[in-house]
Image (cartoon, rainbow, N blue to C red):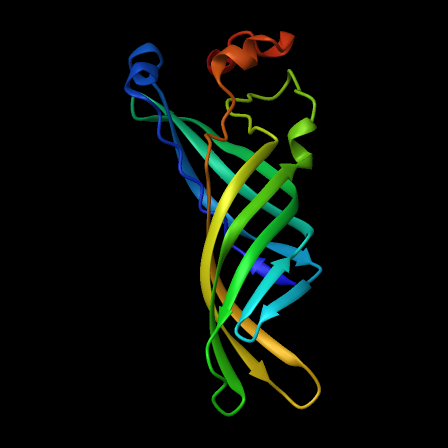
Length: 182
């Protein structure tokens, strides 16, 4: 079980900014939670192959500005991810009851909240794609206590593709013919 903080960057292209003057900004990042099951294969003394299937829940709040004026202050993007990370963990030598490690690998995530239906009464400006592949890098410490092992880890995860739906895909949804003009 762990706490997560999703940093979510929105960078509109110059072509988009010329066509539409709405400018998105991430205003609030709420902490989330993830729960994973640890599956560990130890092919060498200092090397582990880890498969950590699990779920992650989180939320981001997006604001939109038009010509410097706030248009929508509460665009909430909620995500419920199924995660399937495959990671390589290299552990250092154990010193007393502490062992440092570095970890890296790939994570396939599928957003279950991405299937929510559009509500015509709400101003929806942004929608997230459901699947994506991420690379992950991190470091941590294993603390060997009397009855269990506690691991503290700091990990960075970055997606390979753009997560926002393109305008072409949004046109296929009847209620989203002009998604940025609602």
